[in-house]
Amino acid sequence: MSLAESVASVNGAFDSIPIIDIGHASTHEERAALARQIRDACMNVGFFYSENRPSSLDSCHFSNGPTAVRNHGIPEETIDRVLSAMKAFFSLPLERKMKVCPSPSYFVALGLIEGKIYRKQSARVRGYEPLLDSNVDPANRGDPYESFMIDGEELVPRQDDSTIVENLWPSEPAGFREAFRSYYRAALGVGQVLHRLFALALDLPETFFDDKLNRYQTMRGLHYPPQTGPEDDRIIGIGAHSDFECFTILWQEPGVQALQVLNSEKKWINAPPIPGTLVINISDLLSRWTNDIFRSTVHRVVNRNGVHRYSIPLFFGTNTDVEVEPLPSCVSPERPAKYKPINAGEYVQKLVQDMRQQSFTASDDASGHDDGR
Image (cartoon, rainbow, N blue to C red; front, side):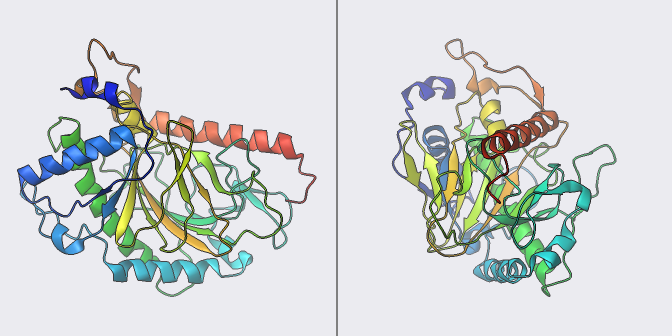
């Protein structure tokens, strides 16, 4: 049965998130078996847990290309270092964190939190993002998290790529840059394993994405402070949304349930942290590329546990010049192509700009800025 034919049996009424051990992928047969599991998860749920087993991934080889894929698990000590760095940075006073905002022109002062709330006016930003800077769900009043965002630094920037923005690094705490870069490199390795497994799951050559997903990827360290005071359903953590790129690799702090995924019956399903795993989810661009056979599932973060929560998503996207149209394996006479070809960079940029304009316009109109938020 082809991909396009098999999607007819999918209903998306999942009640849990599947766990897939990607550590056994040294032979073509093992990778083909993994690809079948991943295909099922991406069609039915759009999310899965990937078991984080560095020792087995270190020896993983792929049949095309002479180089072994190494260091594609994320060691616990790497996670511990970046978590410690995040906790130290986010505990700094706001004025010191604001030193690594891109420039004052990106923000407008709006209310009172330690004196001011800052709202970003551009999506092209690296460095620190303050509380309530984002509002991904227009029905909400702002997302109560702060973040630190980076791109890769090892690649040589392309002169024609306007999406590349230089990283900004704080002078404190000590070791912050090294901890972030170490985690970034390890997570990037996981993504390079996954995009070949995605290719196999889509009945493509496993190197299909190699020259399409090799640009800078974006990573964010996120901090959700404890929410106190009266409960407000319009201020939850991160509002309901889907991601824009191809797929996301998420580490979430153990012991703090917050991530929820929406199934086809409009029920929110918990995706609790499972030690030793990463959460993988399909994003809008890959869903479009697969003619909606792979599901880009709506999700949110609800942090009402009375504790601090930390997480790290890495967003895997394409090179900006890639033309995306439904893949041949995802199209059939019964399921014709839903989408026209589009430029990947322009598509994602428009999604980000539309989200920012719509979400803040809606929340501003609803609140009128009279409530001191």
